[in-house]
Length: 328
Image (cartoon, rainbow, N blue to C red; front, side):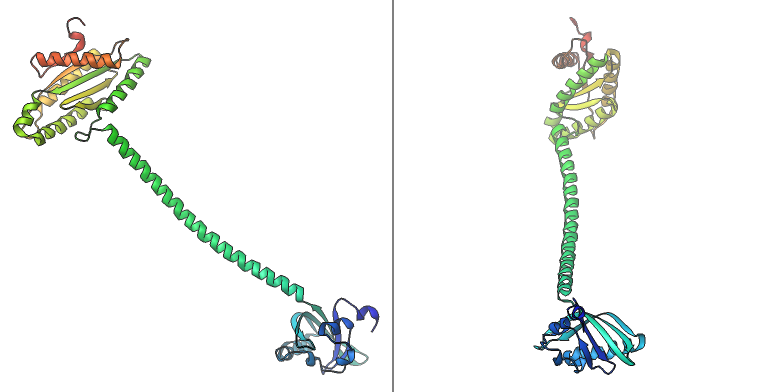
């Protein structure tokens, strides 16, 4: 065997059809830990195989090479002199030389490749575990996100309820005094900017104390809620109704001038007079004021209150516009 083949970077050996080794290069002998070729030449090739690999040789290698004349890239293991396994990638070719059949084989050492494959397999498993954990975390994140969105909706709803509670009279459901005063400011500025008028009604129930004293506060509350409902209906979609305190209510009518506001107030007064609240009937006195160019929130309230006082002292169950008062 020439030196190049003897020191080739792959193990080479050849054996007869009956399995006895005829030649082997130095590389293959080194793989098996054999110092001299005499330790292998003339020996049966199965002498450097484990029982398991002998069975593989009989069940696959021999039949395949007899049938097809070659074996390509078979993972195999030889056994060294000290009983260690040597993993190789084995290629075999059956051919005739000098009238005899020889089976020539090349064995490429597989230790590094197997280590790479183990590392790759381990990395694959780690990636699969990481992917599984990531998928689980994404699932948990989606659940947390859904929970967060639900909490946000609940918070928005809670804030809406709190805002409603902060701006609403709990008994009548109308706006409360604080909300009304802020809305009065905004509506006055808006009407002033667009050159329209803003009218304000103060509505007070006549002799309301007598109802509470005679029939008790539950009866009084019943009358208040009924009157609030009538106010909301009669004021229309543009009217802004609020409970100003006790038995006193206020109505903002944006865009209504003096005559329209007086007519709206009279309609409200008549509807309340005609209505019944259980066995109770009530009347109201109303004071009206309509904004002028120099009006303020304070002046609107003050003059509507003066008009209300005039309705009260004038016999009750009536409407008085502040601009009809003497000296206005």
